[in-house]
Figure 1 (cartoon, one colour):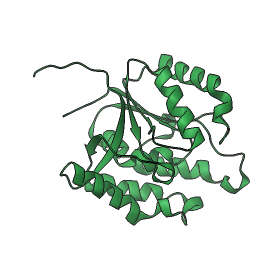
Figure 2 (tube, one colour):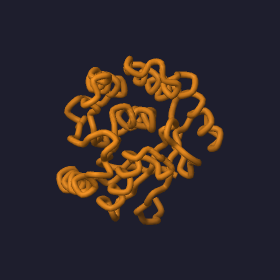
Figure 3 (cartoon, one colour):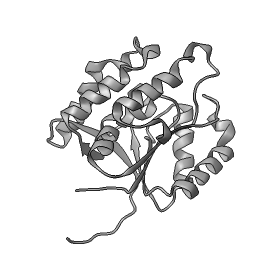
Figure 4 (tube, helix red, strand yellow):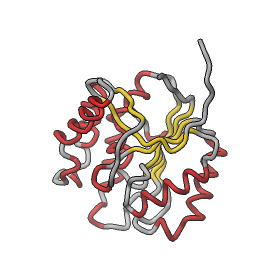
Amino acid sequence: MNFFGRRVLFLGAHPDDIELGCGALLHHIVHNTDADVLCVTLSDNQKNPALCNLVEEHYRSMAVLGVPREKIVLGPFTTRLFHESRQEILEYMLQLRREYQPDLIFVHSRCDIHQDHNTMTEEALRAYRGITVLGYDVVRSSYDFFPHFIVEVSEEDVNKKVEALAQYETYRDRYYFNAELTRAIMIRHGALAERPFAEGFDILRIAGRFGFG
């Protein structure tokens, strides 16, 4: 099945989430289609002094995937406290809907147990009724994730995802940034679809129509 979006919105709770969850597909879309891509992260994590370099690392990581700074948005919300700002997050997403008018959205899987990730996905499903929403997996905080929508990516896409994650010097010792693990996940998802490499997603909502030609 081929699928597409003219305006594709990638949503993450924190810097690194989008790259971890679907960096290879993001690279593929940027370099192989004429889709307009916007990447929005709700928290910049800058209230933690140990993460002071994270924003610049996020920009460098996205640049590797081909996303320019003007297509990257960092929101105002506080890490680990999204549940206290549900209404504000909903209104923020509704404003994005009015201004950007996305027709395909990627956000965290519903199997993700991180409190910010979970809150963000719930509010996204409220804000983007009537729009296709797919959920990506962040291995560190996933629980019982199994992909039911599998998207083939190329070896170049895989290599660029690995290179993008390597820009996060802050997290270089974290197991979930390990290049072999990153590659293994995409090999495994590819095997489920009998392809060399793939990224996998939850189907949170599909809005479409059946046709021929």
